[in-house]
Image (cartoon, rainbow, N blue to C red; front, side, top):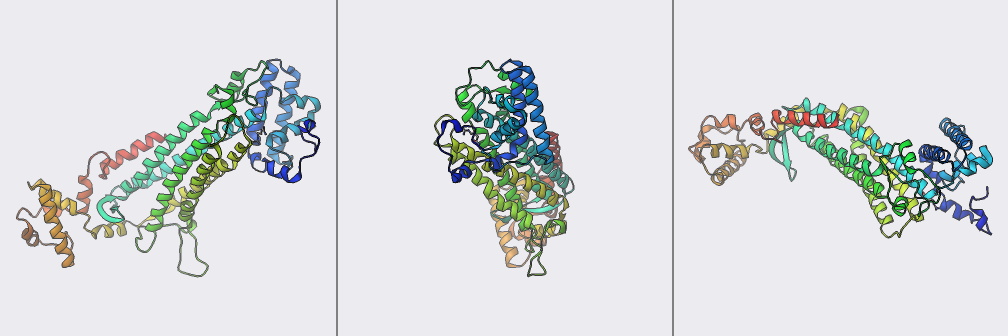
Length: 457
Ligand code: ARG
């Protein structure tokens, strides 16, 4: 088929250039929003009498027909078309003749594509937010069941102080709540209506941008036509928000991978969310968590890709910007796929509470509490810290723990120790006593859970 813009050219475009130039293989994903945008544009053209009311109606119903034919599969995408916008306009013209040719009045593909990406991504942002909310909800449910599940908390991956499993995973809920906040913020800047910017300098027709804005459910129209066609901040922002979200998921995945190793055995993944080995019959691998960790690389790269693609572009539209779609679509598809698998993997995993408890009994994670015991009896913290260090060293030499020392042994290091030391260093006491806002005591974790649930309601 001859190019729409063939009039100006004396030769056909080289066929390799055609393929190189074409974006329909990936922008066909936007067919629905492209048609909805065109319907609003045609409605506005009719209302403003830029085209006749009758022709506007014909265009609207023609576009609706194309939409349902594409939905049903009756109409197939022509992969020889230059992009989704050209394909739909050409199809409309095939069906309506000259009337179809009026659709593109007062519009350019530059403002059209800017509109389409915004419409496409705002829906995706909503879907991603919904999934992250589900994830938060799943974490809260697991936390609710594990407010008394004592486990070692780590720094430097060394056992440090006692916490609960609920407290540990609620840390991730906090990250995901921030992710939701970032996504909502990004939605605000995405939901601006650029149509009417034209190719770069708006249009001479008496268009009604506010009408199109209202018809398509945007918050407001963009304020500068050059910026309207060349702004891809919302793509970079979304790619950034997804990259951070993927980094959070990747950290969580890393812990899950460790926790289900024989070295930890804090959890067991459900068979439906694990895979086996082709050679080692005993293996059960956490592939989902590993893939989520691995796929975070793409999300980070897509952000980098978009930033690099934009960084030297003069105003206004440049064809470079066609590269935005594959990057941001990949980020969007990746995060959704990851969340759809990660959430049920969490929901179905078994928490091996006893193993967490046993791990807590080793590693002297109550040493700080032993020092604090002495402080509460009047010693200065540095002196208490030194005495406890000596006790730990004694335990290591004699294969003991702070719990299994006798009071006599304690007293050799400080006369201040009494029978109540054993209660003070009991792991559950250590957790219960950390009762400040943000701490691991069940009371504090309960209010964390309530706050997260309130935020995601
Ligand atoms: N396929 C193009 C893109 O995605 C649409 C805009 C083309 N505009 C142009 N003047 N060639 O960016």
